[in-house]
Structure formats: structure tokens, C-alpha cells
Amino acid sequence: TKQFTFSKTNFIPMITRLHSSLLLGEFGVWVMGVCAIVWFITLFLGIALSLPKSGNKLSSWASLFKVRLKQGHYKINYDLHQSLSVLIFPILVIVSFTGIYLNFPDLVKPIINVVSPLTPSPQITSEIPYKKNASAFSVDDAIIKIKSSFPKAVVSSVNCDPTKGVYNIRFYLPGDVSKSGSNNAYISKTTGQIQYVKLAKNGSVGDAFVSWMHPLHNGNAFGIFGQIVILISAVILSVICVTGLNIYLGKLSYRQKRAI
Image (cartoon, rainbow, N blue to C red; front, side, top):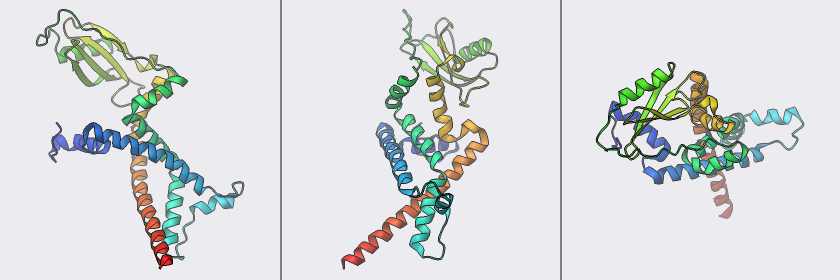
């Protein structure tokens, strides 16, 4: 459902849509994708400005993490902004890049494909004749079919393509990075036959790279530890944003005073 509600059933999906698209549909996905691209670029501009001039001296690097608590409000904000940004820079790069992919996969996939060819999406042809409202094979039957073919499978989602008369089933197998699974199977609604199977273990390096995108973004790739790291990083990022705003306002106030 797309309704704005705080009911138990809809709250988490609503938060997910808010995070990925600001509840604005395709336009929101585009906005968040552009923000992720800008964020990714500015991260490297920021780290370039933060690196010490004497990069070969350990003391210069240690100074990046010092906060001058007794030298005024502006320097406290500046030092916190710099030290926290450098501290979680690798995590922010990963989150911003995966954010770009999740919003603009068609933009990133061609780049990945140059390095390691991705497995193309299957061309499933519709079964003729196929009656839209007739289904000899139910969703439950399709799930049973997957579990009989892959005893260790855990089905995470089932999508129906009524135009082609198939179920697209996503499932998890031991060893998958994503908790929702990195495997897909297309099963005919009419005959119950598996028309196509894509297994993560048979994929290319590019396929494996793509399968890491969402688990890296939310921390699930490393279990509860990864989720805690992402949570802490989100809190730190909030502090970085606040201190960045304070630095800007401080500079703006200083320039206005000089102009008087």
C-alpha cells in the first residue's frame, strides 16, 4: 500500500519509501539518486581539503582527530566536522555509492559490465494460449516447487507476471550475501515448470558485486555488527551535518560583520 499511515502493517514500508524516494514516487527516486551522486563527489572533495599538508608525518595525521575544546565555538565545530568526517569516510563512500546504485541501477550497471559482464535478464516468452484468470499452478505450489528443487531455499518474495504467465521467485540459499537471497527462478503458472533459474554461485564477479549493493547499504552484509556500524555512522553523519551548518553560519556571520 502507498497510503501515509502509522499502522503497524504499513509503518516500515512507509519508512523504506521515505528513505528511498521521500514518498514522491519516481520523482523522489530521481531526487535521492542525484543527492547520492552529489554526496559521493563531495566526500572526495572534503577528504582532499582535510588531508594534512605534511602527509608523511604521523603527528600531522593525528592532528586530524584533535578537537580544540578551549578555543571557541567555531573551532570546536570545525574540528568535530573534520575529525568525524575523516573517521567514517570509508563507510560514507560505501553508503553513498550503494545509494547511487539502488536509485540508478541502469546508470551503474553498464560501468560494472565493462569490468565484469553481468548475467543478462532472461527473455521469458509468454505461453500461448494463456488465459489471464486461469492458473493451474498457485503461488503455494510454486514455492513448494522451489523448495523441492532447492531443499535449503528460503523464499523471500514471489512476483507474478500476468502477461507472460510466470511467477518470478526470489530465494535465499546458504552463502548468499543478501538476506532476501540472490537467486531467481521463473515458474510457469500453467505447467508449473521452471523456465529459468539464476543462481548466485554461478554468476560472474559483476553479479556478485551487484548482490553486495543493498546488504552493504543497510549493513546486513555483516549481520548485527554491520547494522550497528551503519546506525552509529548515521548518528555521526547527523553530527557532521549540524557542525557543517554551524561552520557555514559562522563564516556567513563573520563576512557580514566585515562588510559593515
